[in-house]
Length: 412
Image 1 (cartoon, rainbow, N blue to C red):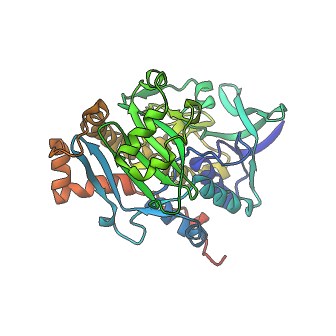
Image 2 (image 1 turned 90 degrees about the horizontal axis):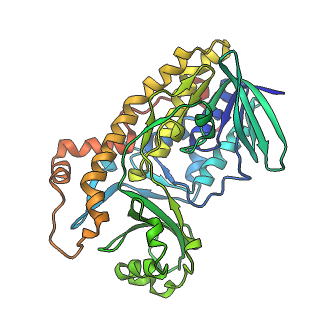
Image 3 (image 1 turned 180 degrees about the horizontal axis):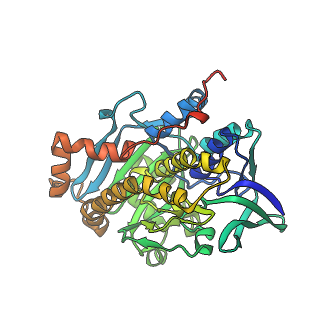
């Protein structure tokens, strides 16, 4: 049996940040990632202000800013008459008062490279955790299977599940989340992009569709909102109709009407909004989407996952080094992260009910003189209230401070 001090399962934002920070504390950490690389097309790309601050503190800011990226300064929500700006991030303190749009694989590669420079960090690709090891009621590691069919186990003082909303380890631990209704799912697909097209992030809202186009250089990654549970019914209609709906509001897409030739080209994201009541067992902790799945609204799931990793590293490094991590230590991580999780999920539930649900019921009337629902008018029309969603979506309730042991100068 192999052994490590901390086994982190999942090489997403929470897992990679936690692994890097613990390694900078001199703790032996092994991160397991089931895929060959980080190149998943339909990951979120948002890097929020607290993560930008973190990268600066880690001495990685210059390398990050050298990556191809665009900026988002405002968050909009569609309503019956168009779209309302619900968060203006430029009202937040600078310099990092914007959301950077960077392909997540570039962000994760940056963290992996930084981790590789630490002698106690180990990243194992093509290795999927399949279950938990237990001893006298305590979690003491994981079992795994590689892409080549090899099986084995890794003993660990602490096992951390960062393996997403469908977490295998969370299920093995019999931790079940409380779910909240969501009005939408998301279709993801590609369209070719021409040099004459707009650049960056393009929002499209029509009576038939609400979509976001993300600039990937030579193609658009398209996210289209659909009513919850409508995917199976919609797939019985010709796929070309979906693209024609977009062309109706963006005529510059007309020359690629046949780019999506089959429903096989369209992936469906089952949007979830949930959170665990308990994030831990003895020797085991859930973070990120494994602890709280977020709606795509505001792209905040990645930021919350990163902040979970920062908080866990700061609060647990000492007990891990003393080999004395208790269930109380693990419970304190949840209590620290509960308020931002609940606050943002509550805001998302309001935006679902007051903005997105009417838009997804086929009632968007862009050409009309409709006004936002009253809650959105109050939110966007009151200067004091306008800062609340900007704070929640941009920086959360409170950003987690970077642990002193992980800070590095850019020149180092």
